[in-house]
Length: 263
Image 1 (spheres, rainbow, N blue to C red):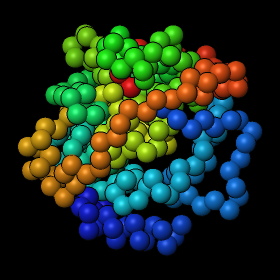
Image 2: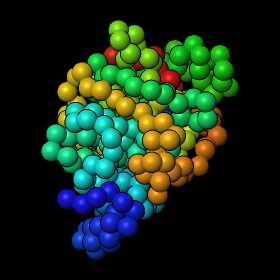
Image 3: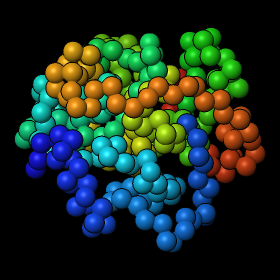
């Protein structure tokens, strides 16, 4: 195990390379056989689907899953989220962690403070919240009726539901097809992960599990190297035909729960 610093991560990246809500994947289509993916990010069969591999251009530098020694300040059995460095840490009892890159909310739209994961779902459906419909109708208005769970769902392959006490916050840690958003600020407030990463994390989460979201001062103190990495992306306006038209109907399935959420 190693400490998760930029310098040590770069050395590990060289060794591994030497050894090694938008795109919709239609079942039956395959990617070119010559395509090469980083370990853990290739074609991934899951339930009734085959998730496409993630192109290496989205996995550059620190923007990929990595395990090592945990250098943060939270107790074991915690998810420690740094919205400034754009990482989520799964903190384990033995002092190790897996660090995942994440996408977070645009300015003023991120969840703050602590929360508890009380529910988790595979392939959940999605419905925009009333707040999303009110504040950005041009982005979400066409989807007010919701999108079923499946490859076209903005919540991706998995979702972890964040609560405060008995109250649902309507924020989630979830998968995404919007690969560009990982490592940047671009969501309506939720914490996004590559689908491959949320699947990797999902079975390691036992409910209830605490989620800690670092403040600015803590992020600067613990990980100054990566503080405020990434950029803020504008909202993406998606053609409703991509998600609601007849062609994607084959991608639908019966989801565990249709979810109203700030994605």
